[in-house]
Image (tube, rainbow, N blue to C red):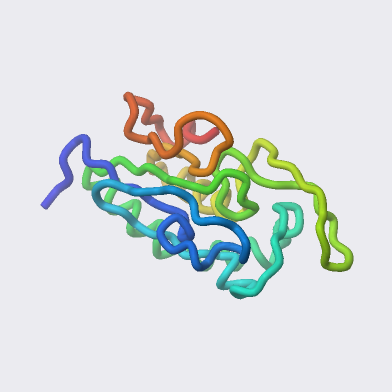
Length: 173
């Protein structure tokens, strides 16, 4: 059955639906999708395990992690492309400040060394995983909208608000 013209598919970062994959000590984020939802894999948990330390984007921005992310998204992008072809509108929901799954903001600042508390900041930009996912959607000409959950201010998760859908080459932050 084809999707209706306005059918929205939420494409959610893994930890929004399964908070057990978040870095230990981080509280779950409030997120309740309505309607059809695709849960993306958690690249950090799969690559670094569940007992990982918190990291920043600059630590993950290495060829090996990017290659791993691309291997995770290939089949998901196939599915999303097929759904979009049937008329679905894609709302990619990321996690504010995430080094992997931020779609508007990510983190930067920690430069390595012995484990311990380290200063870092939220900065404009995408996390490594979402950067790879959205680049592949754009490469295929698939339209999408992005939104983040966990912002300090403003509305969280409002892809459905208004008519803000853009062609893939114009989507994003």
